[in-house]
Length: 86
Image 1 (cartoon, rainbow, N blue to C red):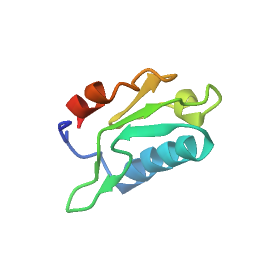
Image 2 (cartoon, one colour):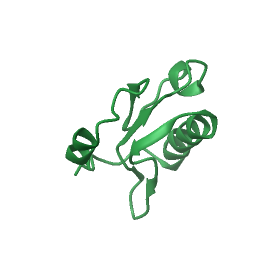
Image 3 (cartoon, rainbow, N blue to C red):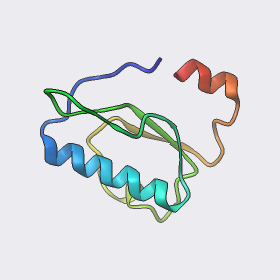
């Protein structure tokens, strides 16, 4: 399982990360892991790896201060590799 990491600084930062990820997913990206808020006392966002992010996505144009990474185009399609990340 991917480590959980610490919280983001505030709810507005968590919302920014969430919206950038949602926008990428609405276009063509695929979430390999994560891509969701963690509810609770602090401002957690699950560590996220996205595959097939469009080159025009805001995700690649804006600085993301959060646990989000881009795997590339069809970089992680091997299920054994994905299982190790979960």
